[in-house]
Length: 294
Figure (cartoon, rainbow, N blue to C red):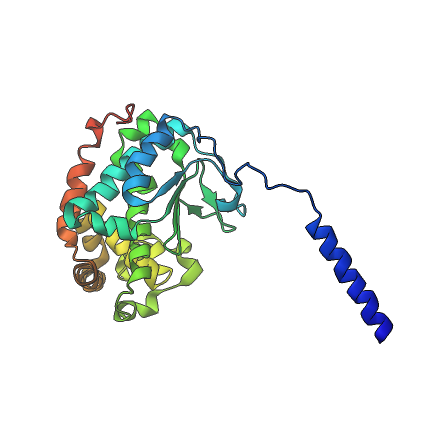
């Protein structure tokens, strides 16, 4: 035991000498990046219009850590990403700001808005046009479909982008403040989980849902209700109720009442007012100059 102690003691002394005699000098170079980040015009515009006011990053390049490689995806065109970013701000962020003030968007907007050039398709070949992840990220797909022809077709743009924005934002709001679980019980027997894609619009309407996707589960139903209501005109909304028949329309209206109550109580948002603002702004998008980043 004594021999071991001597050996260990010698070892500690040697190590101490090695450390104390080291001639290494601290480097004067910073461990943090010191070179300015080079940004293009679009990226500078994003800083001023998304990052600084809302703490939102807009990502249009398929960065590995944020990309879901279970899908085969194409990067978004930068010019089309810029156009969509202008429209998103105008029809989503600015619309909510007009109704509820900036704090709601500042506090509840996703930290990351990801734009993907192509669609994503599941194993069942159903198309994914948008996703929301834990209130942190919203992904919008089909950005490369934003052609001059598409820009003239509001209904198709609504299907690709505008409906998706409001749907995914509703998920974020629900994650922060859950809605009344009684909502799910109104059409509880109608939820079919992954089999929703086999349902027709009329089947969904007659069962008390605004779309087949709403039949997936309660939270998707809630998000679909709000997104459809605020982006459809009176004529389009009434067409759904007419197609639903008396029973289906009654169920849809029951659920709409829950959605209105939730948004008013939890977020102080009158969705009838929000709907008026969204539809007014939607009618003005042809006047927006999407070639200029101001």
